[in-house]
Length: 165
Image (cartoon, rainbow, N blue to C red; front, side):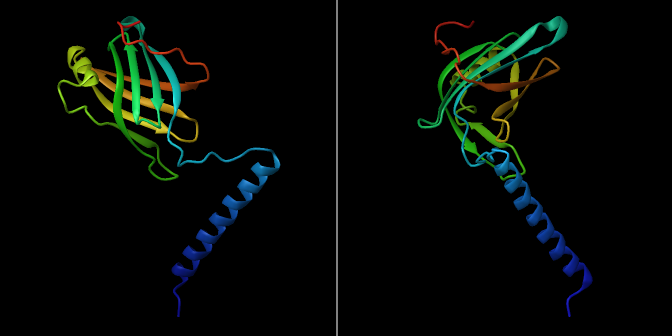
């Protein structure tokens, strides 16, 4: 004999699946297509944060999914221009952000690692929101937490390897 809690749990799971299917059908009727959460980030992203008396800190990213490389430029509290940095993308599951791991961050000779060291900063988070196609970056520098959302831009400016902007 099944316990009531087991029957209730099965019923709730079934209800959740029915609601998800209904939501997709309603979205399809409205012309809204669900985003494929397995697709990795690709293209240009940029964002900034006004840190008051510290000024504006900004970031630009170019993510190349085919090469597994990204270009990253920052200005403000943390300065860098790093090209062709290898990364690994873990999409997580449908309920979590994807995570970007910078493959050479533990190497002191790596451009991003060296730039963080020179700026006395550290990367605390490099997440990708699959639903909004946006990066959430977290840095720490001299006792200050810096959070930047980098939005997808259609016509991103190329990141130049010579100097910071």
